[in-house]
Amino acid sequence: MSLNLDFSYISYEKLLRALIVNDYMSILIGENGEAAKKLYLRHDVDTDYLGALPLAEIENSLDLVSTWYFLPDCSVYNVCSKNLMNIIDKIYSQGHQIGLHVDASQFRNFEQMTETIEKQYTYFSSFLPISKTLSFHKPAPWLLNDVSIPTWINAYQKEYYSEVVYVSDSNRREFWKEDRLYTAINENKSLTLLTHPLWWKEASLTSEELFEYTCKLLGTDVVGAYLKETCKRYS
Image 1 (tube, rainbow, N blue to C red):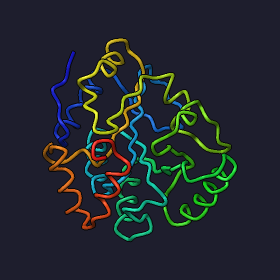
Image 2: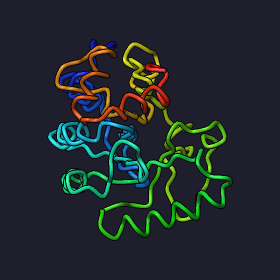
Image 3: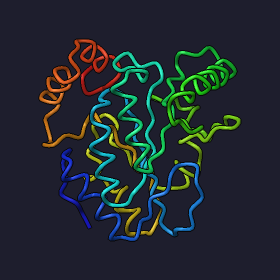
Image 4: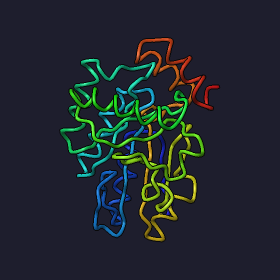
């Protein structure tokens, strides 16, 4: 089996339909499902928050659920803005889950990180429907080693990372051209699929077109500086 995809919304829907046909059942990260072939759909919203809702609506149209991780201290978007709060509320109302996307590189040690995460949760959960689940932004290797954070569900815990087939579009990887996705399908293994709204658009764009489009869409040159600093594609 192979899929002819690109980074368009049509292709994203095509991918999800293929997984449904192969008996995958979507489950929110942190929930226990009885399905033999679990599908953990996960999204890290690093930059293009306006691209989140279109993907969530595609999933909702197929009766799928996913977990959306937003940066609490992003230099590109503000989770306290009215526009983004409305988007988050709409995503949540469709049955999806909202969590925190944590940049651990800013902390001196594990204790400071966990203390800050708790403070962020206390604040943001007072006006946003956030669950106590997190993913790490550009994680250091030690954060991929089943790190346990008291009272939190970590998207890199072994049941969502090393004990399933983990597939990601990080750095705009065309994962449908790799074996991992088809290994999961052909060997009936549970799957975690991580995607970033930045890459997916109405029509698939080249890296250069996407860069210009995103800067124009979000209306700030800070996007260019941010992508050059954080994404190999533009560094």
